[in-house]
Length: 363
Image 1: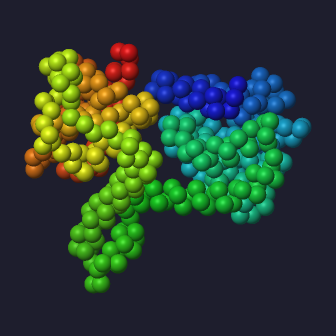
Image 2: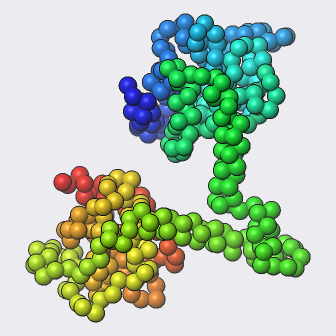
Image 3: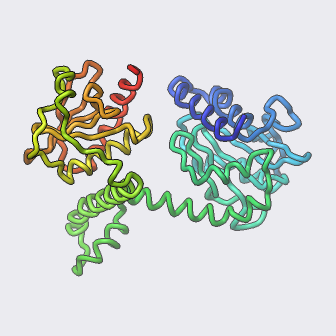
């Protein structure tokens, strides 16, 4: 099985079974062993490759076990400690890995709950496992940039020197990236003070912090939205954005949820195009982005699948002071929801994708 396909298979199992798994042993069977076997490429039924309940006595600690040891070329290369799906992964949960790391030839320690895989090395101090992972893989939120590094950890490609040479940069870049993501989600006081210092010269009393927290949060979200829109404009190009009024033949074939009559005075606004690009980005997880098109009309701007007015995805009611999204349910009923800024469109990603999936299923 190809590496990418193996990863997708395990991801699919987690999505389908996660909510029904409530023990560590079930987590091992359903998610961890398939990952070891299919993704990392070890024979889980060969104790010469995969040793369950691996024991390596450490000092006065006797009889402690690590869940799995992976063996290559006759030596233990990777130690894996397992937790139940959904469990928090922390340094405290990796205590046995820390102890065993120095007593075996293993250079890689892994702490996992089946969904999240934390990979550790001894970057900071030889033969002592670092407290922070050099590689973090969340199978339900995969960072595509880590997959080439994960490939290096598979049995067919395992090269500890290659892994070690890139692990330090990977560790620090990955940690910094997650720290930036945390700040964008929930700005800390230090981060708020850092940014606010560019526009405010006074003392940072609590009242000032309370004032700037929501402002920084809003600025960060707007920055991300602008970045997404700029990338989409570059990727899609102006020729890919099809903006037109409905033709007479469309109107004659339309059902009761069709669009308004064509009107030369209709102008598609930049706000409508921005919303369209966001919806297109949301929908492209389930359908080719080129199939999402836009047409404008007097009462609303319609976003379709395949430029077909019988296949509506979303409507944009942006002509008044209050903007509304028109979301469709399984009965083709439109519900208007108010939005105050473009960021709020992302709140309805699931409803948008559900409508796209319904339209695809009807093909």
